[in-house]
Length: 301
Image (cartoon, rainbow, N blue to C red; front, top):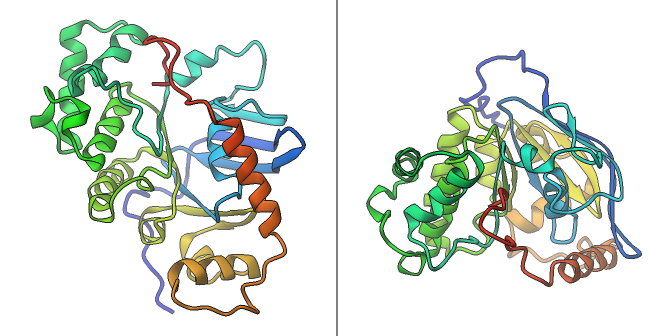
């Protein structure tokens, strides 16, 4: 088996202290436990890809990091600050995080440039001119410098997602969270978004990426976490987790993803399918109402 070289953005074996520290995290929706005693850490400059089947709790884990979902138990520390502490200024913590969702959550009545400047002016108190300068630089970075005056409806899905990335970057985040950013895109548009994410990784951005893009995870990630049924099954270098998985469940998942035309009814019988279905149903039910900002000052967007 050929071993891939380490990602090019990894410049030192001596990482700084953890940017995100998750300890015994639990999350339930009603009677359904979606996350069970999750413990993990993400260091400065690391790119961690979270993979796993639908209903494994991947998106809920991501949303617990910036408290879009309130954990049922355990702690989540971001830059040493416990975001689950009732006294935590969560808006201040969120101002240092960027999040890119499956859906783009752009304001349809605002131009691309306005989508990228509003939060800067409200949260960071930047002048209009300064905010526009930052926004234009980030639009150039994602290859959309010439679309600043367009409205979201004039863009393709891939372009809208790149605008969402530029908007997040315009807040100068220390950490980027990506929740399946390519899942809603046409296949031919996925590459442009992944190229932007590769560039961010090469520049040293700390990133947690929930994804089904196995080639991206293997090429770009420092670590891959495989989740199933609300628990972490494997966590390690992509060459090990994807290239030589140790757990039967990981092997079964990757076989289905990497060789979707292969059908083995006996091997594919999975007793945890029912649990994953309950988790997925609970997650969808909890998020039935769109998670859009109550007003334009919400720093999450």
